[in-house]
Image (cartoon, rainbow, N blue to C red; front, side, top):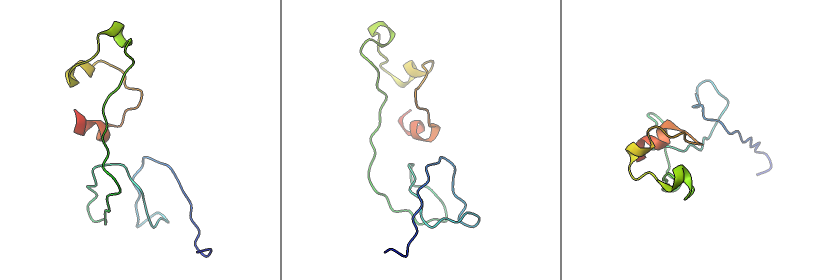
Length: 83
């Protein structure tokens, strides 16, 4: 379809289809986007990981153990389901 112009943009902001010149959005999340058609692409399994030497080998065993640890990537929506 050479007549189609496709522009890819990576962002964490939500798209306002009434304001933005956008037709399709790929979004990582739980799929709860009211008033939008949602088509799940895949199931995502995620979990915290750390080096075996983290904290002198005293690795976290529960979500509570991670409360004071700095996450390298923090996306509240992503981690809320895990916690």
